[in-house]
Length: 45
Length: 216
Image 1 (cartoon, each protein chain N blue to C red):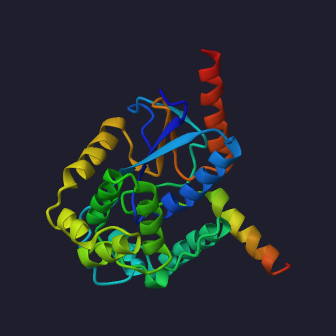
Image 2 (cartoon, rainbow over the protein chains, first blue to last red):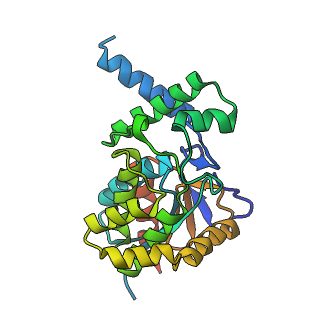
């Protein structure tokens, strides 16, 4: 993630998009739900 | 002056979202359809990691973050699933957790030869898919030779750390820009896009830049 108060750029796009900060990589909730949905599809649940 | 839209991307070789984001950006650029010029910049997510970390990525994250092994395994499983959605077969069972600074030096070496993009893709694949070591000079030289670079020239460049200052300059630039996470995309020098966005988001930003240029 980036500090919008210090960056010289106009920030566009989804502010919750997945990114790695330090040695930790966040997984946004919508990504987790997408994986769950795919598994359900694969399992024909 | 080129009409291409310049995209500067800060990224690390061992960043799972950077490889996923690369694929999504490439798809977005294809949807946009115009000329785009990409330049990668170095970002070290974990510069204090030893070259030869004695353990798996699961153990590394568990130790560093104090997270239970099971929780880390589930997290990596989810990332692997998301990577699969964009056609990438992450293999965390064979990933070598390491320090990536020399791989960044190799990226700058490749950039000096006009072949940075090819090297970036190869190093990400080496780390996440092939289970290759991207922290040791002999392993990196082998990867470079596979791409057709001269072994002696690459070895000299990496052993002398001739490109280390370029790596550190990229990192310093990221700090100056307030970039705290990667991937981070700077588009046309004025728009910032953080993270592995959906392809359509990248396409929209590129189209916005194009229309702004045409309106001038």
